Structures are given as structure tokens and as C-alpha cells.
Image (cartoon, rainbow, N blue to C red):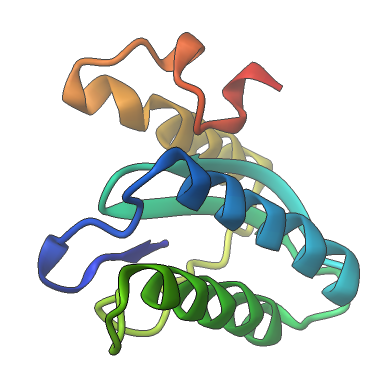
Length: 125
């Protein structure tokens, strides 16, 4: 999970969401990280990943750094979009994994959107 600095937006256009998902896919293959669930909100994102060979830090660095560079270049700005390093929680049981997966997919409901139709979530997959 990571959030925009000052809770500000991190996804500004549809292309930003598409870029982020593309970077997730590339990084997943590059670092052998399995992405099991995601939800992109305007000012934060959630991921549920499995790292059988480690590499979470490298995976996240790749995605976040490339995303920030591309968005900053497009917007003509510099500096970070994110409030800091990503936040990770180790999930040590199937029950916790299921609970976190549900939490991720329910995120759009918090702002009154239909989670099943929300385009920036893995729920539909």
C-alpha cells in the first residue's frame, strides 16, 4: 500500500492507471512476484502480492520509481508523489489473506462506487 503525499492524488488520468498496471505486470515478470489482488484509488493503491523468492523491495522500487518519473515528466513537475516508502504487512494465514483480499476489493465501496464494476480493481478478474 502506498498513499499520495499529503493524501493528494497519485492517479490523474486513465493513462496513469494503465501505466501503473503495465509497470506491475513488467515488474511481476522481472522479479517473480505474483500479484493476486490490486485496487487503484485516486490517492492510494493496495496490492496483495506473493514473493516466493523475496524481492518485494526491488519490485516496489521498480514500480513506484518508474511511475513517478513518467507522471512527473508528463505533468512537468518534480519530487515525489508518494508520502514515503510502501507499507507492507506479512500475511501468515489463509484467513488473513482472504480478509485482506476482500478489503482491497471493497475499497471502492468506501466512496460509494460499485466494486464489481470498478475498472481499477482486480475483482473483475
